[in-house]
Length: 259
Image (cartoon, rainbow, N blue to C red; front, side):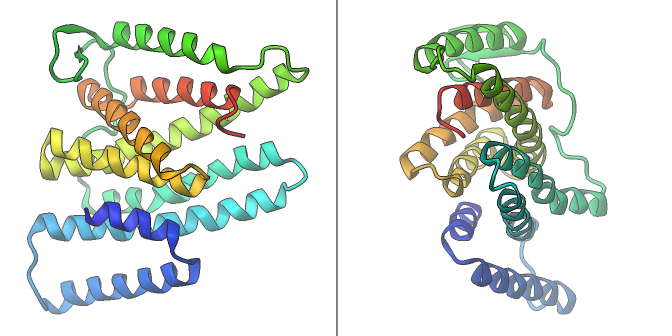
């Protein structure tokens, strides 16, 4: 709940307020650790640090993302695409924290395509398949559905496809590093697979509000985030879920949901 409140708050509150609040929380956290004002459990301490990393990363990401978009205002599509590179700055506080603690995140690895995934509940279900076959069936079905929402006759279809591929490559890789590589790993380590999956997945969905999506759509993204988190957990890495995310982002762009 604390992390969900943090990600909602940074999207609704003005930048100066978020910056000041983040600075105050950071100083309070350092003071409490330095002078041992209270002795929180490791879970509370780690979650507080994660929230602070999220606030700092989000501020850097939004600030430089807006600079890039404004600098490319005459090329709106490329401005949006290249602004996603600022996700590097969102990832940075988490990466630095891992370097400091030297605790490798659970899912910050390539992963395997051969482990079993169950349908419809990922961990349980009457049907089961290796991840590669599950992903193939899922993506074929999703592509078939989205094909009905695409304008195949538009005059700049090839250019639009180029935008879609560029956006999807940048966004899928960096968001997966952040949300499944670092954040999901943290919560699974602290709360177990099921609780960690739900917390990280819901927070992932809520984070999309600042991109212009309504709260109901963000809740749908939360379901998608839980599904992708499940794939990361079962594969023990990011390669399968990056492919899944990439294809979905391409479809979102081509169908007009993004750009």
